[in-house]
Image (cartoon, rainbow, N blue to C red; front, top):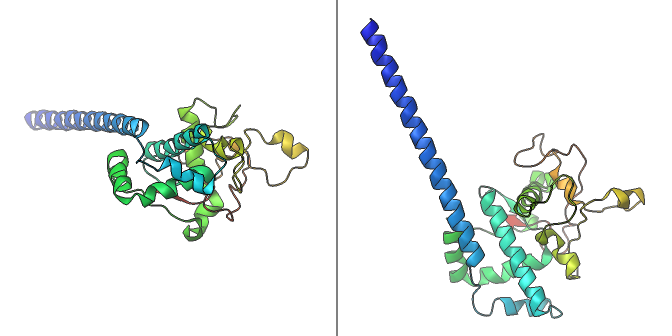
Length: 237
């Protein structure tokens, strides 16, 4: 009997060791894969002529403005990747316009997605989103959290906005989506419909705080849904 128990304990110990080794190997693979894909996004050179196409919708954009938008779109792609390739929503009309143009370079976009995400990132118009996604702002919250983490901004009490959320106001984009880091002073003055970045860190999301912060505060809708896709449409699972 003692021999049987001793053998059983050894077998259990071996299973635990093997499981621990496999878990460590998986975590190592995940971290190295994530770093490699982030590096690819950072170093990616846009297809020839893509950045210049922004002049069609935004003729007032300067070369430096276009660089900012391209950086904003890359921040969006990194947020999608770091969120585990879950559903994300685009908070900038300018970056969304560039995303639209990039998708039209079908071969380049397909190759980019495979190397950056390991799968194709589809563009989902706001009109076909599930009602619960629109109500909860799930995608915007996820992007807000990841962009803040990337730039060392407190997602609950932000002193400033991440680039992607600041783009439209900074570049004075027509029908752009405007956010504020702290809406309390605006609300005290009676401003209605303001969109506050810190609100996106609220735990109010279908009863859970999955992947988001926990400010315990209220939150506002991101975008009015009438100006293209910014602040509404997105992609991912």
